Length: 80
Image 1 (cartoon, rainbow, N blue to C red):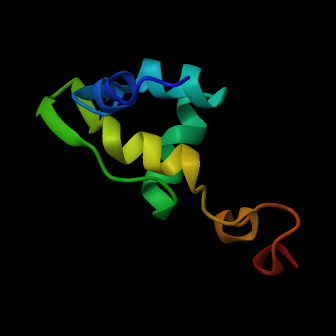
Image 2 (spheres, rainbow, N blue to C red; image 1 turned 180 degrees about the horizontal axis):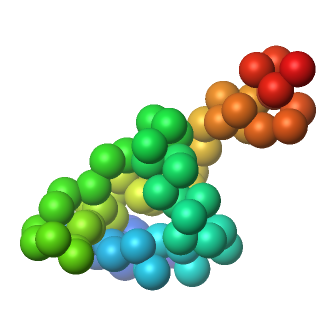
């Protein structure tokens, strides 16, 4: 049985780039490209070298990823 308080606690707080890329199994450059293209949410800049993302936003992205064709990959209509 899943403890609902554990799920809620996972969505409280912030992730940094390293944590997000490990969760999604992608590179940092891919993450930044997704942010730039609007496929991923924009983060909050805490200082010149530190950007964070709301955990709830990242978990929502994981649960409902945007369509693969929306990122301009090789199979998307834009690539033709």
